[in-house]
Image (cartoon, rainbow, N blue to C red; front, top):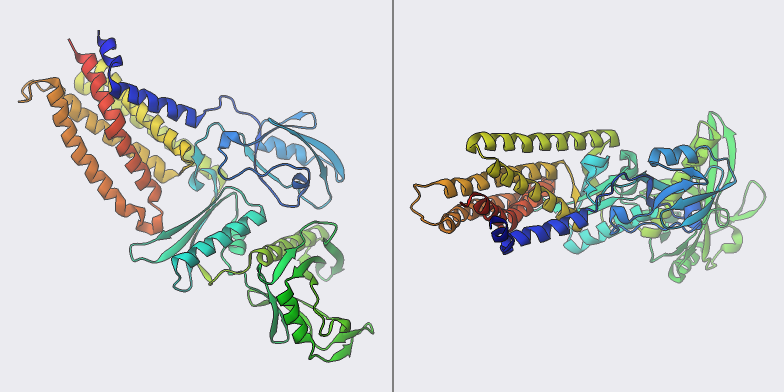
Length: 520
């Protein structure tokens, strides 16, 4: 009879429905193996072979997973990189995933272009604290509007996408004083990467004397070549003292307006003779990035007053060895190409806070957090049993606690929310608050001296207390959404979600379960 009464309750079935949705959303993968593809570098061997870049909206378990390189099985990310490092230059090899097969070429001094990680065990997304990476809090140097803030974030996102970085989060934030900030979180990126890509205004200007011929961005530049070996290349390397110097070059196309502007500037210039005996204009074309001179080019005399659309951009790369010089040239080229494509930010940016967490430290944080959570749950169950001397009550509270945890994690997976340490702390705090509410319900049901006669009336009284306490908790969390430039936002959001799940789903189901278990 007790089981039949429980199965007739809509509150119990509401809990079951949410548990099923949560389990399907988490999609736990037992014994997951392989290397999941996180991103593909543009114009790399992988991109040319047709390996697709996963969308930011793709669930972790929905991404392609590399299972074999040639005939060798790939068990994890370390195994993938170990196999790739054994490949010879100019060697063709095959990558097999769980959905397709690709043929790639290992080119000299050029990466494959695939960023991988261990195959995900579920759709639960780990935040920066748990997977490692860099978080930077940026503040515009000037007062800007919300539209300008949106433009800055869009430009940053475009830069990071072009640069080939994955698992990127960009969001706006504000403090209690109303100051605007931008928070950028990049998994696997170093502090240097973030400083170069997002923390600089990225103002590119091509000047002839003091006159600006054209600027970076879509208004002046219609095309930037990024195809290696054709119109973008490392042109030459030479040994200098002390080390090596390499030169990169790539072609760009100017808009008709920019070409006219350059023609009007060169029309008034005089003509000189270069050291090689070639006629050139008496002023050079100077390239400035963030007001720093990058390179200077002689302008051929036959371009005087001519609307030249195609321009060759060059720049240097240096290093102790030839390979390091090539690597530096490629890095400088990619940065310059990114700025030319995306243009400069509307205003300068200042770094307010910059944190970097290693992946190994993130894994340790995660392990410790779950261990603490497990100890807390077991401790609560033991204390509850000692308090009531009833395995039925302990079982009902244990089931409710685990259900709350699963539903919160399922909702986080469903809505693609990254869990960080603050969010895990919120889960533990929410479960603790839930136990407190369940004790209120239990005590009210077991209180024979209560003026409320029926069990139903006692549960109503308990829920009145619970609703008041939960409303106070939600109101207390609202200021945390903005406090600390939104760094406590994860704690506030998960706490609010946990309270709502408890009040409307798990607490009512707990009351029904406890009533059925204790009914004589």
